[in-house]
Image 1 (spheres, helix red, strand yellow):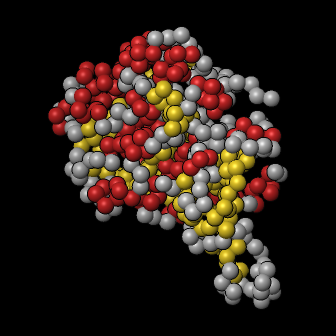
Image 2 (spheres, chains in turn blue, brown):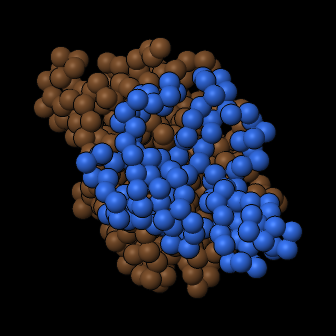
Image 3 (cartoon, chains in turn red, yellow):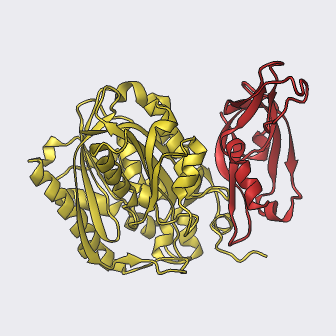
Length: 131
Length: 348
């Protein structure tokens, strides 16, 4: 990932800042500049999403892209946040047998990837099992 | 008077047993365990580093402080394992908690006492009325070379403290702080070196015991304290033997040290060490209790703090996970996994 792209996305990657259309009451994550429903008549504002939710669905990755290979097996989950939309996130610090649909999860701030030994470190949200 | 209004701790979930490391290097596990008083240590996950540990501890501190992150006027992160040599850890922590903007920020290094140095600097800025709230963090993912004595204890963890002038939300008030510093080369890491070097037994009497002992005695003289006047003692914990022996030498009982002695279960978290001990004490202390904490940083120096616990501790301590509960929430890994997690083997 390029450094400027990573930098632009810091608010939503670090703090789960999404967007919210005051006209149609829809929440978006990643945030949208324009409401895809209301178009020009929409009224988009930033919203801090809850850091707690539950697993809506998940898959276990056993064959990963090279930079994530050392982490296998790991789970990628669709998470229904308390006040927000479904978001996709890696689960961390858990055994694959413990990952179940409906389990409560909470956000943690972790390293997502590194641009090699000398490049930028990309931080962001992941989720852990809350119980 | 400067007070702690929020504190938080974080210990990674992974543990490796001392006996597992000893077995790999052909040592008698029981001898090593008995010698160090360290039975297992924390290991950061692949996606954890000093910045993520600092952020996790800070989020708990913010919850206990109950303040808007934008009110924080300074962030100082003390560590000897900052992920970047050039780019402050504090900037990432600031973005992660949402307090970028008008903010004083820098990273500190002083071996294992950089976190307590951060607290002293935040205290000065608040006392001088440059800031209202300040955040001081001590966190590390410390490294010990494979086979080196350090490998049995070098671990990961951290603690964060939000300070302000004493008010109704004060958890504990720092009545006094002082430092004792000399040029004592007991432990060091040169630029571009992955692992630190140390002076073996030289790290004991002329280094740890001289500095921690002197700073603690200076504090007790200045505040006219006797050992019985204190409820809890927290010293830097490179192993369990040093702080317990230090306490005995100064006339303290084992009971005064035990609550903060986290090292036996998580190892030496370097800049997080004495601060994690302090969080463990705050988790149980009662209003009016007196705490004396003396950190130690190789090189060498010791920062000593005399602290009185305030009323707000009762309503704030249960807001977040407590340090000993976090220590008990663990999963064991073997040495092979440990070498991957700590990047001790060459990967393609």
